[in-house]
Amino acid sequence: MRTNLFRRALVAFIAALALSFGSVMAASPAQAAWGAQLPVNIMVTGNGQQLGYATGWVQFDTGGTTFQYSITVCRQSSYTLPTLTVAVNSTGSNPNGTVVATHYMSSPGPNIAAPCYQGSQNFTGTQTYSGLSNVYFKVAGNTFVNGNNFTVFTQDRLVSKQY
Image 1: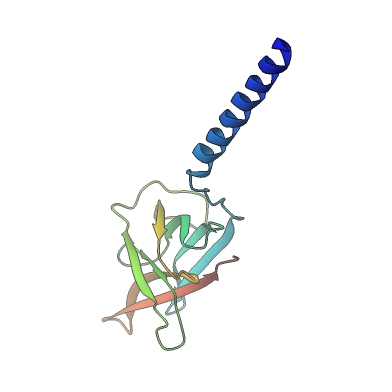
Image 2: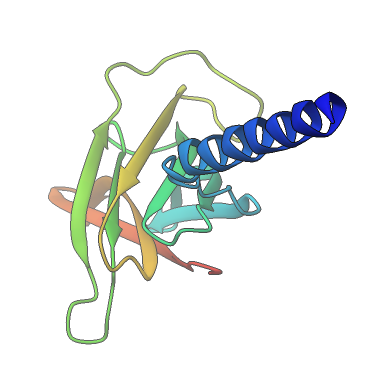
């Protein structure tokens, strides 16, 4: 009789413990995982010259609202240092999307392998944006055209989220 009472009390205690453990664990929100790193490669040319390029990756979270990126921008023949603009939700009516970051090279940086002879700089970031559907990267470089006409050239890449 004592054993039965003890067994019932133990089962009731374990059941209560399991229920309270389950409610504590359910209170924590689930964290979204990161999807695959998608490549980003951009070459800016103008007036017959390679002005700069960018290479790296972007990665979306499976929750669909956050992305992270790592892009190395390289100066080639651009008169001034190239810039990298990061925007979200590019559409036909708004091709530049909503700008969330603009990166300026702070100095030419170290020279890396050819064809990057004028230095490079790496830019990273993590952005959260409600209603995220794509990320738009734009690199701008510049040169003089016809001797004295300062001209900015751009090239871009649009990467759509996978989730």
